[in-house]
Length: 280
Image (cartoon, rainbow, N blue to C red; front, side, top):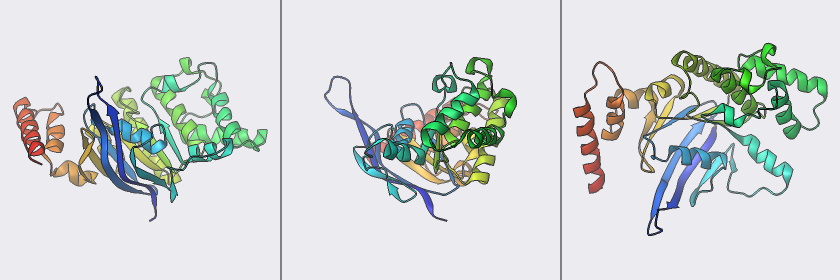
């Protein structure tokens, strides 16, 4: 199966406070994601996973490395409105807070029509209406919510609208940054099931950013574990979570609250990982 997304040597640094040094948010990150595949980016806050996600969709520019989607290098600078829109259609992002990404003045239908108007200006009214109905059905909302505004929807419903807006342009890659972390557990399960269904039906590839390994296990085939801008482990999600090879990954797994949770073990694993890192 051809790759939808290829990331090679991606590096990004930011100036440290005081300007005396720089902080690597991503250092020589690389992976491949096939069409219809799904990858989880996991790590603690500050690990660089969101910076990596933003570079994939073009919201942040890397210092080095390449991002290729459907064989097209994302480093080229589009000239003109149509070229910029074509680039935007390749990869779309769904954020943690759907309320912030939705125009409070627009109904759900208007928001979807606005996306279609910008990306498919030749679409007539009947075709646009049919497309809106298809998108609403795909995310499990239906026409009943078409006339609703964001404040009239629940958090899960708003996230479904955000996903519908992203899918409206038929992206090759959909990047979700902590897209279910603010939702109740039951709603999380519904959104995760929806994403799996969409992926298998449409062939869109998912990059799922999360600190929650249980969530990642539900929706991804592969996983990339990040620590301070570096990839410390990657592989099959099931295999990595069942038999982690890196103490940091094991520490993340051990940190999840549960009947076998032992804070002393978590501290031991962190110390072991930091010792190995200092010797590398």
